Image (cartoon, rainbow, N blue to C red):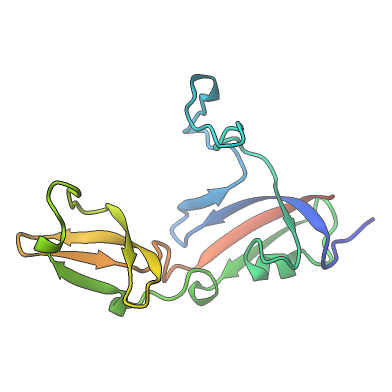
Length: 166
């Protein structure tokens, strides 16, 4: 039976979860959600349904997925399953409190942005780099932003199955 080697393109099914069991990513259908692409809901640019489940295709060695999953796929045969834990440092990084900062509320024009907790904004840093910041606190005087990835500090568990070698 064929086994995966570096450079192969493969199709896998997976569930990615947090330590508390919360599913963060999956190729399996979510029984709680339905996609109504006929009405235009959840339609991607290519016309496919964004929430259609199905195997994820990747080429090993091209950095399309977590390196530890790509490494674990090497030597697998179709139908085989594995489970790996990706430590936070190797996933989305450790949570860094220095990535949380406050700005005076006056820097948010009331007619353009209604600041509320959970709102994500694109922010330009001092070096010109653009990154996403989430509003985590709003007061009359200031707005607190967090530029950590929402999954920073979280270990991820991926259960995956090699569907086929393409």
